[in-house]
Image (cartoon, rainbow, N blue to C red; front, top):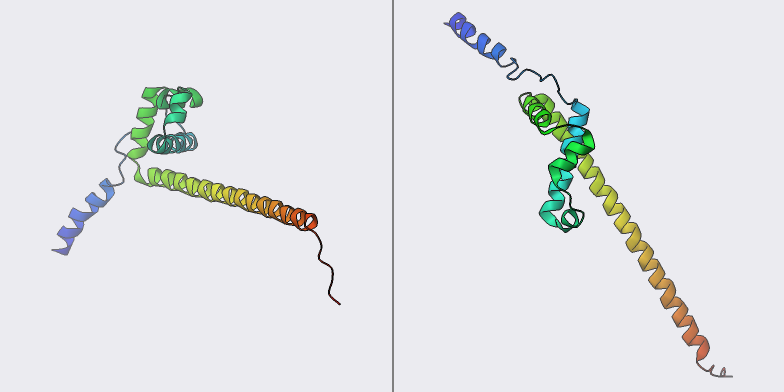
Length: 145
């Protein structure tokens, strides 16, 4: 019984390693595909929060991506299908994208905090100079003996 089970399970395990889709002849490199997917994530995030910037600059997502990376729609679709058929690679690509987005968020938060600190510091200097100016303008009371 165990031998029968082994003969049934082993072919299933080995068949899982088969490539579902062969790489297309014009496959976009993994690095470039990751860059494209990163840009798409940023643009889609922008579109979901406030797409006025895209409209003002008349940016259409996919034509912009195709032009920026020198690919066409068919090449992109075939490459995306291929990478999606290899979950290990696709997951690695998306983990890389997620890490980059998280780093960008941290950087933006750090810059925002620096600007806030700078504004607070400037406001404090203005208040201090106003206080000094108002103290020097008020008459001095004679010291008591």
